[in-house]
Image 1: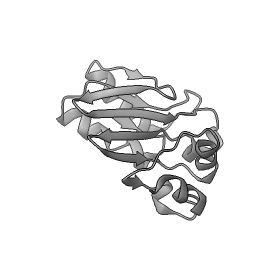
Image 2 (image 1 turned 90 degrees about the horizontal axis):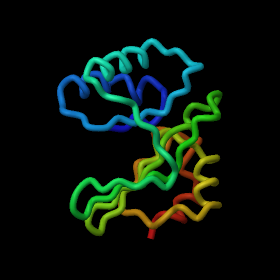
Image 3 (image 1 turned 135 degrees about the horizontal axis):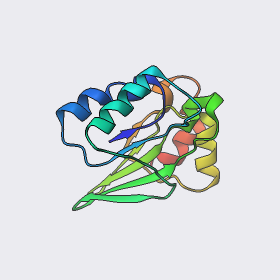
Length: 146
């Protein structure tokens, strides 16, 4: 389970999922300097299930089964004033289909991914920041769509 970043609309609902489904690993970006009530509720449920929040690193890869790979493209927990840009960005490959999940990242992160050459052509895009005008730039779209 991944909570892309520490905004309520991306993590608060995790409590119900953790309570109702068997979860093996949990990844959430969080800086202990921040103290959000909803995050503390999530953390309490995680602890009650004996789970640990695991850390992610850029270029981390996970096999989720035959022909399913999950790759972390971006992780940054340093710009707390811009929490959207601390979102985890991940690519899922299933068989020959590629899915890109941008969290709430904005154009600054898109540009970083482009400059690092980390983007591939994708079949499905989960746009950044709910499709707002702060993300999904034309340059970004041109890099990921075949």
